[in-house]
Length: 81
Image 1 (cartoon, helix red, strand yellow):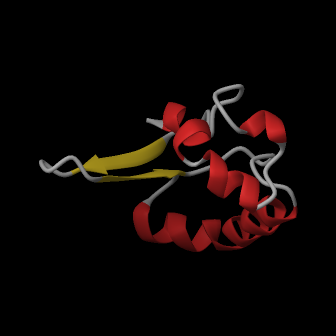
Image 2 (image 1 turned 30 degrees about the vertical axis):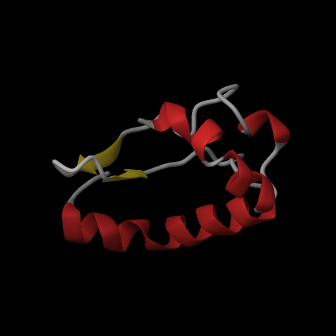
């Protein structure tokens, strides 16, 4: 369901400093595997294991560094990503 990110969350991406080409569907949010769960009521949660590094400007770099620092621990807990 990554195709909806640029449209549905475009305002939030813009507020966080996203590059303009990330708003809309010019680029996918993530091209790698992830996890998505949806309830029978239509609500859901999606998580990309490696969101596109260029998704956000400085905020995106901080997020990717934070995730990289924790990747080994996460893989120990749930297996290889």
